[in-house]
Length: 363
Image (cartoon, rainbow, N blue to C red; front, side, top):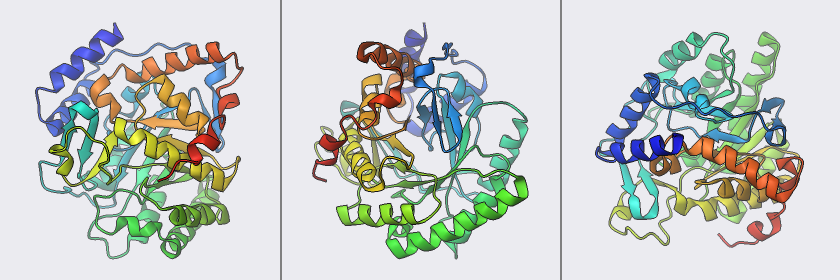
């Protein structure tokens, strides 16, 4: 039933331009039109990471639910956790339309949205209205395009959402805000992490709990850039890394016309590069620092491969554009089936089992 609905929903939305389709999918979820995924908890999929217990390792990446319209509806689809945002202190419209493009042959998407969102106040109001509803909802924080002090914008995000976020993601890896990726340079990253984590420490004393902070990085880093990020991650009380965001690369795409559009590429073609970068990051940070793998996940096999390459948890978004809202349920069930085949007692037993192969790939 979920699979048939999912396929029908995808075909129906493809009649609209991508941004309109996105809005319609949010409206459908708000109206309760997507079928819920009923999953019995599989103890083998349960992961505890950064002090948080995840019922399964699959999450929704930031970018879909920018304004925290449907976090609980997404959890009902089978995700073990969801991430809202990227949210900036002030509302901003983002870049000019059109700014989302489908590459159907490649099962990919190019976007140059530019952190379009309704700002801290609107997202804070929606998350506050959830009350005591359970479910892991992370908040992905960013800086306004015109910010005089971008570091201060990230600090403001920590302070604003501290009482509501299950975790934070510091997003410095979008290619669609000019200069944002410069924050990945070592000196800039050091200053950013010091400020953000100092704010977290102050808020932790105030609230009586420490909320995990993850750093989301780009897949277009050099080996030297990965060295710098790993070194800074290990020298600060950061709770983990998310690898990775969209890519500026256009290698091997079938649709060479749409490929000329500016923006970040996501979806199936990102899988190999993002997974190689994930493994290289895992090699550099060692076995203990949590790492979330993102990029091109469209099946249970893809999700498990990210884990084999060093991920503790996995996120997806763009592949749902093509597979529909039934994809997370299908993946979680598929992971249970794969663990049956592998005869292991926990998905964690398979982490790093293909780390060396993926880490050896050239970028």
